[in-house]
Amino acid sequence: MKKAYLTIDIEEWYHLDYLKTYEVNKNEVETIPQIFDFLDMLDKLNIKATFFTLAELAHKHADIIRDIRDRGHEIGCHGLDHELLYNKTDADFKEQVIEGKKILDTVLGADVVKGYRASCFSMDRKKLDILKECGYSYDSSYICFAEHPLYGSLDLSGYEKVEDLTYKNGDFLEFEIPTYKIGKYNIPISGGGYLRLFPFPVISSLIKKYFKEQNNFILYLHPFELTDISLPYPSDLPFKHKFRASVGRKGNLKKLKKVLLMLRKEGAEFRTLEQELNSITNSEG
Ligand SMILES: [Zn+2]
Image (cartoon, rainbow, N blue to C red; front, side, top):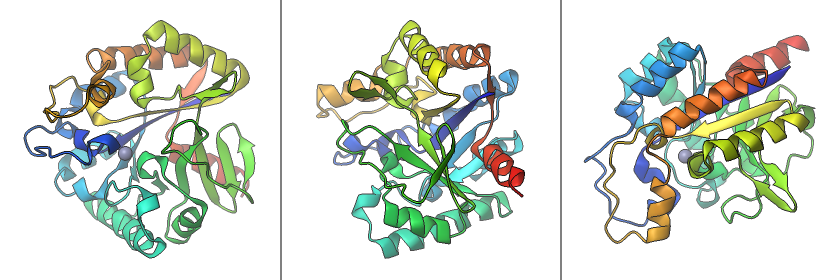
């Protein structure tokens, strides 16, 4: 059986790594309150997704996060803040992942947060081992994309591959973000800017090729990619960054719907990562 996991990293438009050094007006426009068209679309398609949420935004958007949960989706943690893990000490990381889970569980009124995704996939092995000790059951920060300077490769020794994109160490799972290898390049076909950049026929043909060899697929998106509300990018932002941030935002929701329907047509069943976690850990008793 083929499975598709739709994941959304709940953060703001100004959390993009290349916007961090610029002065931005954070309160002028927010994208998180604009995701209701997307949530309604998922309801109509009967798709449940995983929302990795930045814990420092959780109290401000508590009603939205509870609404997402009430619609049957999973809430995971996207860290306390959006600093890259490479810039955090292990001790700070530990404190923050515990605090992040506590904040999200408090907003949701129960011990529900099982999964974690590192900002910009900046996970390393030491921090992965720490995460495992801090009450989390899985991580989804592993991407094989060495061409991108931000994404290193995560050491998964001691993990066994249980199925495509899924690695297991004891009761703890790591979910890989898929890439598609063309020649010596790994093309990240799984979301973010690449989903916006490639026209639908291109992304659709890449995913179909990918599905001939692989059973599982993960998509990842952010709130600013799910609304075309205009964003106040700083006027001195270089063109290449402005292009990267804004390309394909208009009409992206429609394109995403076509991608989701195409995945289903290709035989994929949509699941949350927690559903997959439960199915793997229960099947082994
Ligand atoms: Zn992020």
